[in-house]
Length: 153
Image 1 (cartoon, rainbow, N blue to C red):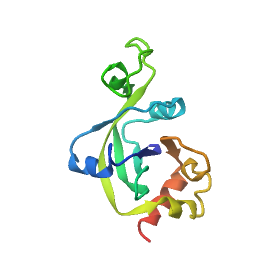
Image 2 (tube, rainbow, N blue to C red):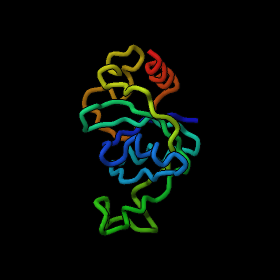
Image 3 (tube, helix red, strand yellow):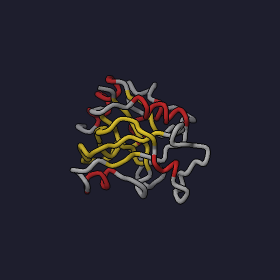
């Protein structure tokens, strides 16, 4: 089972949105970066994902979800009314992927970006490296354990 981190703006899809629909899988769609898309393609059912709130007042890891459906063609790419529409994408050759995820846990306290940046063992995590704006990224087992231990401090 792989581990991941995804960034989201809470106004679009927050850990609270997952918690409100705890028994329902939510599509994770609208990713329009090729490297992030390639990571979505690697996600498998059962993988665990850290939800990271960005572009908001309180930035940081807010909870955990689980992948319930591995990568499939993102339906928003075909919808001309969607802000994620891609006219170059076809049903035969879709360019973009989505995965479905379901609520696992909301952290009692947000793990801030500053705390992550100052935690030994997380130096290689793409999230804390300067200039990285990727919205989907792998998390090593060691990094996962370190991050999970931060919620107990």
